[in-house]
Length: 275
View 1 (cartoon, one colour):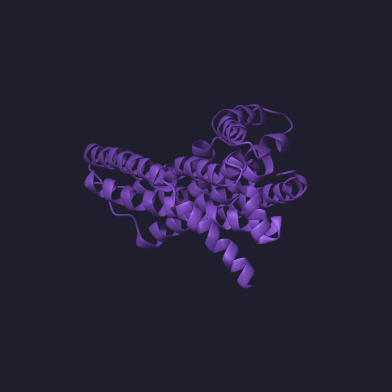
View 2 (cartoon, rainbow, N blue to C red):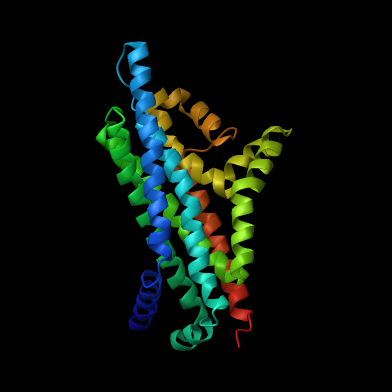
């Protein structure tokens, strides 16, 4: 137990000793604040035009901000883990830890914690930005639920990025592959699957890594804004999928993708020559 704690403490020390974490945290906070500020202004204008109650659209803009935050969490996880291969310090890390699997788990845990920190910053500045833009205060229970799901989703992407960095080893290649997939490839695959026939192929798009995280994030805001009956249709529109699972099932799917990536990282990392 002491050895595991020592490896984990070492990973946190390395993580917080660089400028990477706050270099990514700042744009996360600024971007979320601005997005939700405009969301608040739109909400106020919508309520004025409709002469009705202000809808809690802040939940939706927060979910969108958290969706973007997953990219930053994945990038941090990759750079923090694959950077050791780039700078040739991974050999010392493996020797002191005496277990490559233990190092992988520690890196994934550190990536998850940093992802949760990014999500917390996104929610904090997002709520402040939304309220500054005259958005309605959403129900406290729904806000806490969206925050909890957001923390889980972004933390999973932080862990997935760390595991992927270990699996690929090359920092630049891991970053390029991950960013191209998250921002381009999965979108194209989703479009192809959504228009596919028969229907089961179209439904598979909701179970891809990025889409499963988005479904989990948009599930609760959609239910609050449109109700449990029309909520799934709103999730389909926002996440670009068809027949999405419940938010909790989508969260389990993302956790499964993270675990699968960690298993690949464990097998590849255990056999990689680092001398």
